[in-house]
Structures are given as C-alpha cells and as structure tokens.
Length: 281
Image (cartoon, rainbow, N blue to C red):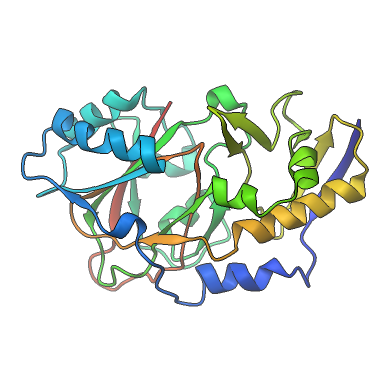
C-alpha cells in the first residue's frame, strides 16, 4: 500500500486544454448529430425513445414539445430508477419535491463549490458522486431545459465518453488507476473499474484542490501521480461534445459512461437559464 496527495502543478500541460474546452468561449459540437423529437410527450413514450439511445451511446437527447410538468418529470425519472434526495443545505432554496434541483444561472462567479452550478463558473469534468462508494453514486443524470437563457451556446453541458478517455491511457496507467482510490473511501472503490465490460471512472478534476489518495497495489507514489496527470490530460483531449440548450430539451447521461462538466456562462440581466436535474440510482 502507498499513500500520497495529488495537487495540480502551475505548469500542468492539460490546464491549457481545460481552458480551451471550458473557458475560451468555444462552441462544442452537439452530441449524436441532433435530437429525437416527439409530439406525444408522456413519460412512458419518451422512455421508449431514450432507452435504445442509452444502450448504444450512454446518453440520450429528446426534444419535447414543451417541458414536462414536475409530475411527468418525476414519472420519467422513476422509469430509470430511484431519484436521490438533494440534502446539501446550501442548495435547498433551489430544490422542489426533495429531488428536483432547479439550476438557475443567475449568479456571478463564486468560489463556493456548492453554489457554482448556479453561477457563471465553468464546471470541471467529473463523474457524479465520485467521493462516494459506487453503490451510492447516481447511475443517471437527467437534465431538462425550461428556459435556455439569452445565449443557448453559452454554459453548454459537456460530455466526454469514458471509453475514449481510457483508450488514451496506457495499459500500465489503467492498471495503476484501478488500484488507486480516494483516501477516505474503502478498499475496492477505485478511480477506474470495469462495469458491464466497459471502463468506468469515479473521478473529479479538483482543479487546484488537493486529492488525497491510497494505492492498494504497492505502486510507487510517482507512478500514481503520473497516471493522474495522464488521466487529466485524456479527459481534456478533443473528445468533448456540448449540449446547446433549448426549451423542452431532455438529456439523460449514464454516469458510468460519460464524464460531464459545463462551459462558462454569463449571468444575464434578463431571464436566466433554467434547467432541472434529477439524479437517479
């Protein structure tokens, strides 16, 4: 067993790639060459459209005639699994029905991590709930647009396939990451694991924050840090696609097949962007 801490160096080569992806105002290509439209937006009918897309791509996009009501939105989520409650005290003003988080892009930049989803900050690439054991992480993230704000190509939701990230790592780097975990998690809860025959990452780019890690395979600290550098670089390689929001657009992300993040937005003077989010186990 070895232990250590990873902190991003000021000259990290991937920092420029991250900036270009998330903060340079770049308009990313949309996923899946567009969306599937439906004119009969009952939850069960939409589920029949998203299911094959999730199997094939690990994500799905459907453009509804109009956004679901909260009741329809919850029913759609129930078809995927169990919605998890939003328990963070900082976000309670934005929570309805205990499980729906209303993402309102109405605030300027903030250093408060809990409030960054509601501000104009970019959000670094991550898998949802990476600080929890795998059984407690959401399987799906469901996002629905109620209002896109004045600039639909701003604050794009970014998707990066985990398959593509894994392919950019060497076999040795993948092995090291499959033996490395966040220090507060129990053995077996590693950064990289296999799920249904595919590589699945449980990881967040902490930007300038410190990541304390434990390696249960006896790899040298230098090897772990090197693998983490390469993981960051692979995440910010040119694999990303960006969701351009419009009213009624529903996006489902498989948390075991895609990293996600967000490009920087702008806090508008008028009506802010409004997305709703469910996290589904």
